[in-house]
Amino acid sequence: WQDGANIKVARSADFGQTWITIVPNLGAGSFPQIVADSSGKYVFATWQDGANIKVARSADFGQTWTSQIIGTALSPLSPNPQIVTDNSGRYVFAIWDDGTDIQTARSDDFGQTWTTIVPSLGTGDRPQIVTDSSGRYAFAIWRDSPNIQTARSANFGQTWTTIVPNFGPGVSPQIVTDSSGRYVFAIWQDASPNIQVARSDDFGQNWTTIVPNLGQGSVPQIVTDSSGRYVFPIWVNTDIYTSQGLRSFFPITKFNISRD
Image (cartoon, rainbow, N blue to C red; front, side, top):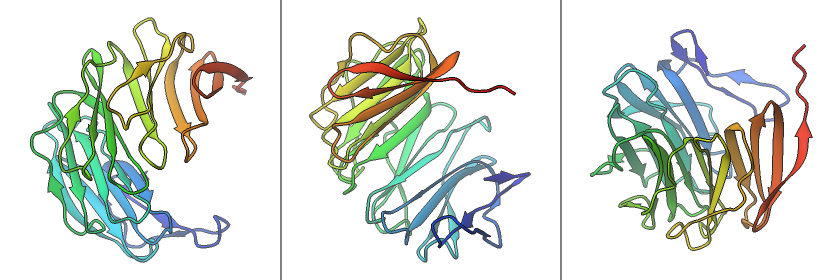
């Protein structure tokens, strides 16, 4: 998290009952994100430090950390760096908005060294990235004003293919995949503003937008189980709505959020 000008991290080794803040902190920065492998041994963080995009890694369950610069942002305004890893922690992928283009970087040695992918994914902002359990398949989504664009990699993030056609105008895109990478789901807010969901069952190569949409709303999020069978979006429409999806989506629950 951001504490004033610094990025701090904490760890728990007793199922979240007690916490230890790591000293020293990770240094100056903003917009932090964190991810771990399935065992918790390898942990990775990313954040913005001025014009630089930094990553840090821990190979001892979050007890000690080392950091490095992996890229730059032409604009200091919210490059939105994101980071994901596979189950083993070997393959790690980062994505960010450099002020003009969507940039990605990859590591195939547990975050020790990084390669920025050339060319970039194209113009845009608000990127998100996910990977399957092996790191072979990786998927990105972002806003290429005014459209929502996706891309896929089938070779551990070494090369990327932008999906044509895009999803059309929208904001707030999110993406998720099952453990195999076969089933991929995207959600976003269109211009209406309705919440749209799209799915792919061929490792992100082809997409189908679900009809009907989920109705009016904003700030959507989406998750799926390891098989991709059960999918759960959530969004705001005065109240908080969620939905359970198999091949189609039906709103099933409304939560009233107290504003006291």
